[in-house]
Length: 438
Ligand SMILES: [Zn+2]
Image: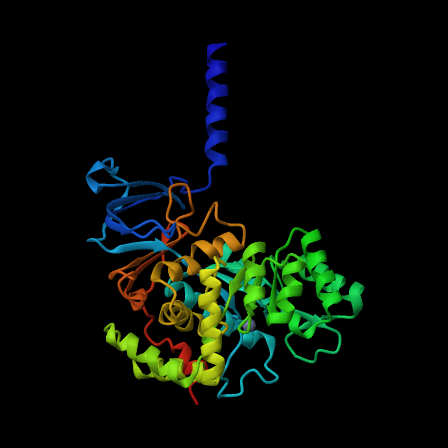
């Protein structure tokens, strides 16, 4: 009888072991001597120890000396006072797009080639600190495929919030978009995008009849999927009334519309990178250099070319800047999105430009982290450095609250509790060489 019980216990034990994945002992990573900028809006937490168990932040102890002794298995990293922030989001990403496109690659490009560039862009973005990319329109559901590849661990890449192809009205000849005819037509493409894995629906709202945009937003919400709308002032009002979660661009918002968005709690992703004058671009380069960051000429020339491909008149750019500051003052939650590539470099520029345009550094940091996660309903898991959240973190050597260009002093990226290998591969061409130089 006794022997029998023992055997049964043995069987139970074997079954339990089999239920655990191989190598299930969760890695513990301990970051000591850290300065935590948690992005809740609180001041930096000095002399902190951040304990990561598996893929989550288990605890933050301050002072460091109050933290429990790490176990023998733990990986302990002394940060020497460096700054720990939440992993960054880029909220207006197009993985496969190119502007400018000096080699004419986009024209008649076969899908496999676009797919390769899209993946490279996303993987480079993770190495630059972007642990999540929100995709606001992508050809052929490339983003859904890359999301699966990264989630499955085929490649090491960022979290992807897939948008699938952007939607517009019948007759829109833009090669990238999917269109619907009338109310039923737009409902059908919304449902089909969702069936194909879209977690977000992007409408090119300013090209759509209002009733069609409203029907499309309704349909997405019927499926429990959030929407974002490419919009100017007039379309923004329609989108906000229809309950859109966020607006892309919105560079000409009137004071009334800003008030309306603030009341409704609509997020604004202003994509400043696409709305700079030559003066703003020159000023930006001066400020980055002043902070002590001298990038290789291909990077500096490249990013200036990207900005100039979307260059605006001083009057337009100044007005867009005023809109952002008014929106921030009204309490609208802003988010950062590059709408340009490479996401890595232009994404950092977007965060810097928030501050160069007048938003406080903490506001810019929250736009790139906390607000982004909140916009996508993911604030319980992401967006701030707090116990219980997923361990998506970046480490900066210098304080970004002192100069926002210290976002460039990146020394470590952790995604899902794992340290990202950021070392360059010998022989690998840069994104600039591959796609953005003549
Ligand atoms: Zn875009």
